[in-house]
Image 1: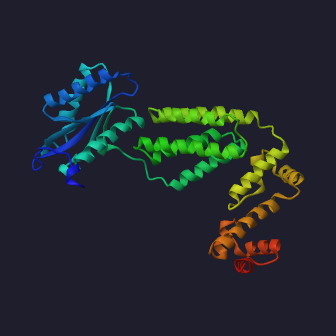
Image 2: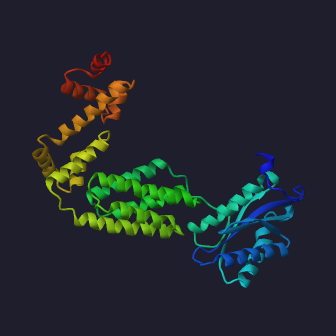
Length: 364
């Protein structure tokens, strides 16, 4: 760290330590700018009068105090000094506040980190009920793989397509995973939640499952998500949106056979690399597996297996001519676990083995 960026202080770190304290007014409070200035000014005076710290900086939303204490009070300073000062502030002011204590700074180089983590401690109001948070005591959930979130998101999307009765539960589980993955980072949760809803909307739009006004609906949802004060509020905002959206999708679910087949074809084009069964596709079309096969062939003139094979072979050709991937790698990327089955399917369609096909067309 550049020494010019290290906060100046006269704290004697041989016998003392520093710690940042952040104070914000409760989000539900309606505080005018003059009232905010008065509130933060009073807070700064209280800390100064108690002899435990002085204002470091402030903005329209928060004030940060840099405190210092004797090393012998390292484990007890919140209860001995900070909380009594905050209780006095609460008694004398009509506003409720949120308080965050940052990490302990053992030297000048760690002061900025202590002040920053005091602000991050205040962000915990978004996740937990309460108004007093110590950064070093924040307990994160167990480590969650991002792959799990991706898998749950895909389950939620498929549940919407198939109009499964537990669709809302699956969406809720995705939101809870977002909270746990980014626990302690309010902005990361908000951004991930917006990405989740935006990606779902984009995919559902490709399946023609959203009305013409879905852009406006999505914009309104994003606006509400951005100003969510707590995670439960954010979660309920999104769940309410999907309750309404799913009801609308279900009310328009009596689509013609051609529309249902187009939705299935779109799904195949987006997921050909996966193991796709008739049951999976029938669920998307909301018909029985037996009727689905008949309906698909009747509308398209070919079986769904033939259509799936065509999509996979087109993808294989592109990979053969545009990459140096080996055949077994291409086989896996286009949905075949067995390279022999892939080779047989390719040869049947193009009358030449994939390796030979690559040699012939790369010479052109």
